[in-house]
Amino acid sequence: MPSSTKPATRTEIVELADQLIRLKGFNAFSYADIAGIMDVRNAAIHYHFPSKADLGISVIGEELKRVAAGRQDWAHLPGDEQIKRIMQGFFDKSRKGMICLTGSLTPDYETFSPEMQHKLVEMCEAILDWVAYCLEKGREERTLHFHGRARDRALLVLSAMLSSLLLSRVLGNNVFDRMMDQLLKDLGTSPAKWVEKSPDWLL
Amino acid sequence: MPSSTKPATRTEIVELADQLIRLKGFNAFSYADIAGIMDVRNAAIHYHFPSKADLGISVIGEELKRVAAGRQDWAHLPGDEQIKRIMQGFFDKSRKGMICLTGSLTPDYETFSPEMQHKLVEMCEAILDWVAYCLEKGREERTLHFHGRARDRALLVLSAMLSSLLLSRVLGNNVFDRMMDQLLKDLGTSPAKWVEKSPDWLL
DNA sequence: AAATATACTTACTTACTAGTAAGTAAGGAA
DNA sequence: TTCCTTACTTACTAGTAAGTAAGTATATTT
Image (tube, rainbow over all chains, first blue to last red; front, side, top):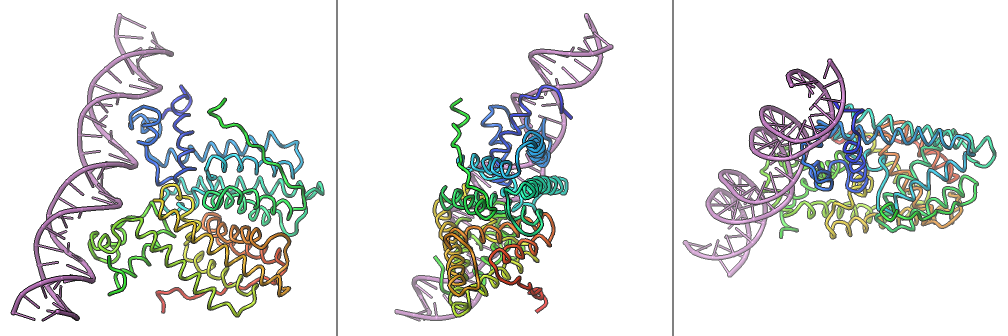
């Protein structure tokens, strides 16, 4: 099982799979899609990821790493600021017509292997944990205001971020802005300004 | 094109498709699944629904009928009561391990035919309209309390209902109850009690 | 220099996908 | 009685899915 040697191809496969999952869903993309873009054969992907579940688990694993890195890198920031930065990440995806992994993968949960289901649960809980931590931090800092448990509030916040991507793709981009504005107002903090980052392919 | 004659088979196909979409997603079920359950041949389904998109459009069409019927039948009820009944509908689905059509179909939006995409937009807007109407009604009746436009608030309410099904399947059933409790508290109304209906196959 | 591991390709299998063409039994209308 | 429609079945096509076995070039280790 290759894991730590030449990472170029392997990494590109995972990145492409991530994009395809966010665009079309796990059950709607195939190894052929990735192979076509990378100009390698189908079997090259099977070499790195014997089964599609292996690939899915790796995609989720990378997201878990990003969550862990975000928690570390932004640990010094106030809770409300962290929440707004997480939202900015969602904004970036929405402007590329992409949805979040939670919104893409949870609907297909029943079609996954037990291992992939477990990994998905792990991811959802990690994200929820982070959001709950930010909310509680913001409440202690008196910049965020809400009643009830931080964990329960995190469910509603994550819910809104997740759905804003689903619904803005269907009903128009302004849905994202409207929902996030309302959400931040509910939390008693100032609305954020979403910065339109230049797309990757321009850099 | 058959549409108004003997409806037994046709109706059963649409009902099964609806269940399969809510369980596994549109791209994860096949005509063979339905044919297997009904003990008819694949082609029988193609007779009623030449393409899979036709079937999808019919499933969405039935949901639109249910929304229209719900608006009519419950028109005499107060806004907060209507909201709670809509939530009860979501509760019923959640206890069957099913998600809502919006949560199942919007992630796969990009893989649909233009006609099916359009029908899905129609459905999302119809549901949103209804929720917004209930919220505004409840606000006028002074049983629901929120700031901002009813339409924007409806986005957050629909968002929470949608996600509660996605997340409770992954994180456990109590997620639904926790989210709906918080949501109703935010709207300044009393929490609802979800009645566990006996499953269809017992009646 | 020989052996081994890595990262593939070529060529293939099995299973399933949506979709179609042609035939047929049953019922109603002309 | 004949004709036509409805509601299928049987038998098929063409394409795609995930997955595999065997071979190969290149780099690394012994």
